[in-house]
Length: 395
View 1: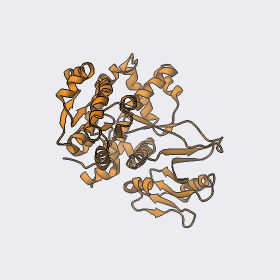
View 2: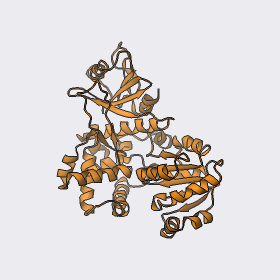
View 3: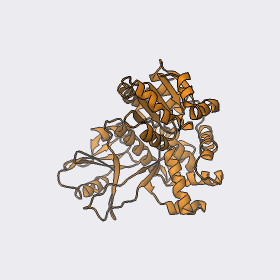
View 4: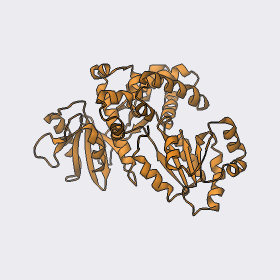
């Protein structure tokens, strides 16, 4: 079953104007399926095949002649040298858009290669897992706890019979064995697996590399190196704080989030909806979910706006969006009935920002209907349910 993706329109639009489109993201987020569905008239070659990757890396001219454009080149990270030679092929017919559609699971590495070799010629799109809107279209009756446990990997929703635990166990094993052995220094895959679990347990918290290092008995530099691996592979993302010169007391440390709630719950040891609801970690998983919804919604915009959080010694807003000098403030709460005190916390942060510059404030929760929490206020603080969370980012 094909699940329609909101990012499809953006990819098609870029391919109509740019000669190269690079589709990046973590494994199993649907990059290959998107490329093949959106560009059925293109030839297709996967560098997952060692022979194809070797030819692309060591004999790129022959490779590009054999696989002539328009072409989808899958898993292009296995032949980074190909990007340098693609420039000539692009420039020979610069006026023809959409000739090369590239996919890869190393976003940062690919962006570096594209910026060095295909600057001005390529557009990059980061594909994450499914949003709640996309999941609801395929499985309208799925309860929120089950949705959080399954996460956003498209295969898990296209085929609901797949066992989530087995899928996640295989995903982690494949990531460890296949991707990391070719990456930076990872002496012990067992230690690295423990490190991933430690990161998952801290999803939605301020990043503390020293604590992560102590959990696994590794050095601080190794902790930073391993975290960068997880970020490059699309497993985690860092949310930067909002601060300006006026806010010298504001926290300037980023927060760390797992990108997929299903993978986060698996690594936390949560296996059922009952365990999730009873877990003290449910609030962190919910905030991880809301962060992903906002991040995906903002990525659809052109140019994309950025998501932040706001925090000083006594106050915090989980999410802050800044655009055109105006702000939106949001808090994630695992509740169906947010309270006036929840609203008051956002109002106190509003008062720290320039007068009249806060456009909206919301508690992003499980409320069945959108409604103001406290009457009055400028702007009022609203309760926004999961199906409308993405709309908070784009209103």
